[in-house]
Amino acid sequence: MSESTDSAVSAYTVRLELVDEPGELLRALEPIADNGGNLLSIFHERGSLTPRGHIPVEVDLEATPERFESIVTALREAGVNVIQAGAERYGEELSVVLVGDLVETDLSDTLSRLECTSASVADIALSAPEGTDEPASARLRLATQAGERDQALDTVRAVADEKDLLLVEPLVGADR
Amino acid sequence: MKLAIVGCGAVGSAVAELAGEYGHRVTALADSTSATVDPDGIDVGTALDRKAEGRGVGTDGIDRALDAEYDALVEATPTTLGDAKPGFAHVRHALDRDAHAVLANKGPVAERYADLRAAERESEGEVLFEAAVGGAIPVLSTIADLGPTNVTAVRGVLNGTANFILSRMSAEGLDYGHVLAEAQDLGVAEADPTFDVEGTDAALKCVILANVLGDGETTLADANVTGITDLTPSALDLATDDGRTVRLVGEVVDGDGAPEVRVGPRLVPENGTLAVTGTQNIVQLETRHAGQLNLSGRGAGGRATATAVLGDVGRLP
Image (cartoon, each protein chain N blue to C red):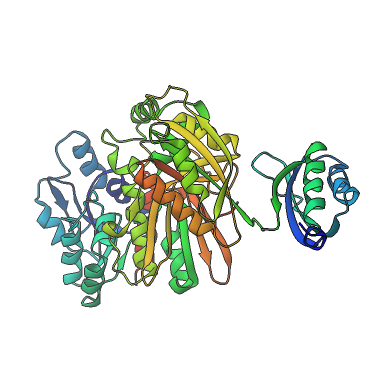
């Protein structure tokens, strides 16, 4: 690769989850500055909590691709939870619960079908306390690109319908 | 006002009991087998005692009650689907003789709304049905005050039985069958709970809301309905781990042209407004100019629902 493409500076967005303790934000920003990232904006959603009970922070920064890679690595090494990192902005999250014969209907196929749309499966929790003979439940957290939440939800509905799974949807537009 | 009450279940009998307190006189009362009629006012206590003894409210036929002297007919017979018989016929009978009709029965308003409004247009009487949606909660009168065009969406927890089951399953980690049996023992769930747990009851309420907000052509067949019978304790646990809980939520949202009705289990924030527990109901209105309005209270029960019926009677001209 040529020197010029390698060193081209792009804008990136990183979504972080921070523990609600003093100094956490500074600790999260240090790896960015230390690795040559140029901070553009920090959106620190104090008061709103992620599903894990942490504080969501969205950081926009400029860096070369290789510097960006080292920033993400440094953040993870520092124990900062990186939800999403990339030039692509993942604007929204969507949690759903599926109930039914998840294992028999091929869970990995279900997941890959959801992956191929504008969403990506950020997190999955599976529960089958009664074994595979009884219905299992799964909670999926999908990261969707801004404005494509409805489309992602339509895909989940179609897959659930086809595989005869009960879908517990999030409530769109209600208080969150 | 002189009231004829058709239907003498929890709601009809509570309306009869409370009517006097609200300044009205019950001139006719009918249950499914008999009626009692008196233009000077029936003796409600005697009629209800007779009914409690299994003898029917009186010695007259039901048609006598429909033809009695009254200003408003209170239609409180059980909800039936499809052509909404006999509730619709009772209401039309009242309108044909230019009397008012107040419904607690969801059937005619959900399934034959256009027919109901057509009959009303040809009558001097008016039709009101606050009690059909959310029991004592003043949903329809609030929408009427706001103006239906200023309400852009409605969502709510509109069935106490389903909500009781979900709250208990979630709190105790018990399975659906166990909690349903408990709810039946407590009298919260009917012996045949299908209507409640499969979402039909909540859907009918949403269909009524859709008719009020839209062009009046919505019926149950247009609603997308999923019940709670397939939910498992583990699904509820997964929701709780995520700071959420599951409620059977009915939604009426702007579709293309006509409002769209959807009912199903939904993830809601565990401590959020919609996470009402037990038999409490809540209705959330999205308004064009006033943001979100939350109305919560008792969505069922004889006296609570009778309060809405008598509120309607008080609104009549």
